[in-house]
Image 1 (spheres, one colour):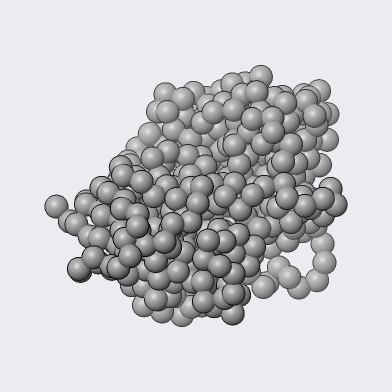
Image 2 (image 1 turned 120 degrees about the vertical axis):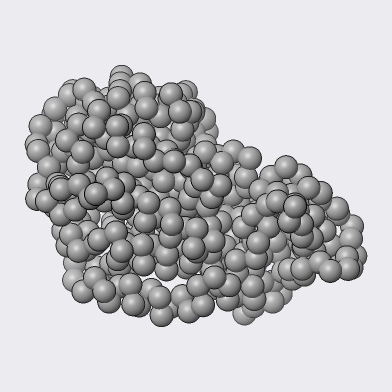
Length: 444
C-alpha cells in the first residue's frame, strides 16, 4: 500500500476555506481529512497556499495547441479558423500526436488540471486509411496522459459527414469510420485503465446523420459512459439544421435519444428558450469554453439560464488559446456581466464547483473533484503570495483564486496521491516549454 500525508496551509472544502488541513492518502485515494491541524504532521508534504480539489478540463482538442499564436494573424471567422486547424490535423501521426499531447497535458498539470476530457476525432491516417491498430491515435492520447501524470476521459468521437447530406471532405476523411456502426465496433476495442476512462461523442448534428445518432447514444448508454456533443456553437449550424430537419439541433438530439444526465452539450451558445428548457429538463450538462468562444468570436452562451433550467455547468479550454481553468471560471461570470450589465451571477464557490466536481462528473469521474475521504487524492495548490494574489485575507482564498489568480499561480498538483507538479515544476516532464516547442516545430 502506498501512503502519503499532505498538509494544506489552507484548503477549500467545497463551501469554506479551512486553515491547517491534513489529508491522508493511500493507494491514490483520500483516507482522512483532518481540520484544525496547526502544524504539519511529521513526514507530511507541505502545500503552502490554497489547495483546491484537482481541476477538470471537460473539453480539449489537444492538437489545437499547435495553433496558438498562428491563428491570431489577420481576421476572419470560425470557418476560416477551421481551415487552418485542418492543415495541422493533416500533418499528425500517432508519434507526433503523442509528443504534442504529452506536452499539452503536462502544461495542463502545471495549470492545476488533474483530469482532461479529450474530444478525439483524429482516428485514421490522412485519406481515411486505417492504421494497423485502428485506435493508434486514441492510444497515443491515453499514453500521453499517463506520461504527463493526469487522468483522461477519451471521448471517442463519431464524425461522418461534412454537413447535412454531405460526405466528408478531403480533410475529414481521417475523422470518419464511414458509419456509426463501424465507429462503435472500433471503439469497443478501447480499454479503460486506472488513469483512463472511455466515453463517446457526437461531433455535431452536422457531422453525424440523424439516423445514426441513436447508435452513438445507445453505445454510451450500454456502458453508462459520458456522451458529449458540440451543440449550437454557430448560428450557421442552427440554420442548416432547421433547413434539413425543420427543428433546432437540440430538438434533433432529443428526438434521437441523445440528451440525458450523462450527456454534455459543449458550447450551447445559440439556443432558443425551448432549447434551454429541454436541456434543463433532461439534466443534460453544459460545458462552457469561454476563452475559445471569445477567441473564435462564437458568442456568449446562456450559461446562467441553462443552470437555472437544470443543466449542470462544467468548463473546458477547448482550442487551448490559453490553458487556464481559473480563467475559464472567471470568464464565465465576467461574460455574463457584459451581457446583462449586472454582477454576481455565480459565487466563487459555484464557479469552483464547475471547475472541479461538476467537471469531473461530466467526464465520468463522479467520485472526484472534492477533498473528502474516498475521493481520488487529486489536489491543486494556488499561491496566495504572488503579485496577483497577495493582499486578501486567506479566508477569501476562493474569491482570490477565481477572480485574481491564474495558471501561473499554481504551485503544486497532486494526482492519485503523487505530486506531479512541485513548486511550479513538472516532476515527470522536465522542460515543458521545450517539449511544447519541439512538438509544434515537428508539425511545421
